[in-house]
Length: 265
Length: 107
Image 1 (cartoon, rainbow over the protein chains, first blue to last red):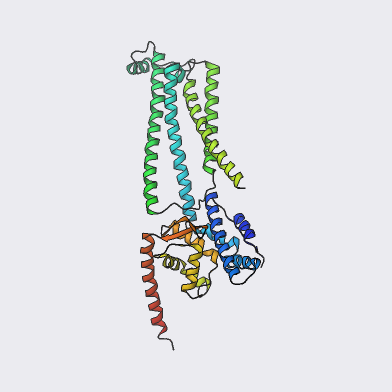
Image 2 (image 1 turned 135 degrees about the vertical axis):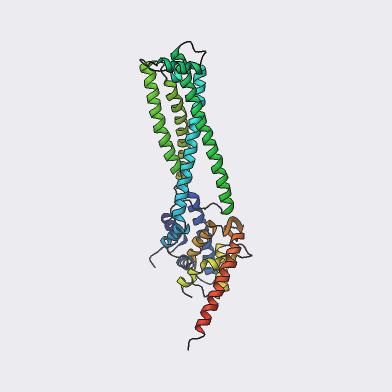
């Protein structure tokens, strides 16, 4: 025999051969260990030495790579499960993205209340409007003293309301996904061996939100530095703050996952 | 019975062994061995992926339980599993009856 001759050696090779999420791998190893210990005890009871009993137990269990490969297939459904997990992660990221947009609308609303409409949606130097367009703005905001002030107030309305609407859409999608998920789980329990590695979604999300947040921050700060506090930097900065906060939350989640894996190793 | 033959009917055998009696993996294999009077020569490690596949499709459920001082994953058949067992048992009975009928004509 060329494979492992001891239970410990067998479990080491099985661990190397298995893929998937830590929880699923741990379960496979725990079940295999319990089985091999039972089989070895049975062998000893039949008169074998401990070493012979362990060797017989691991031989009867089958080569670690074969067992691991069968677990890979055991989601006969492995491909379908991969698609389902990717779709699920994509929906989750979409929901978080929409909710983040909604939150940025609230931050923009707060900036507007404290720093003024022009901080959030003021126009840059040189922007002018036709008389007809000014009339439109003044219809929305008759209290505004100037056309530019009415335009800023109107654009600030749009920044806040459209983003909050996106957030509400995100909440509705989340509720729909939750109901669908519950019904699906009632029909069939959640698979124990996940396909996507732990922390992958958090890594993707942290990168995505981090890059987008950094870009938004650069844009907002650029306007702030070059054109001052009345040129609409707030609409970029409000989004940057939320995006970077979400990236930070996903980053913490990722670090916790990595720390757990380090502890396991 | 060869490994290939018994593996082909593994789902039916596992559901049958679990019907009415929740068992952990080792007990499932012992029951298969005892009931078949040693006819089934399965690599024991193949039973666990099969149990997992049945669990993923909702035909069995499992949970960790302390048995004889050791933590074990105990499997039980679900309602859907019981229905699938009844259906597959019928298919198998019909198949055996048909094969027997054909073989009866052999010289």
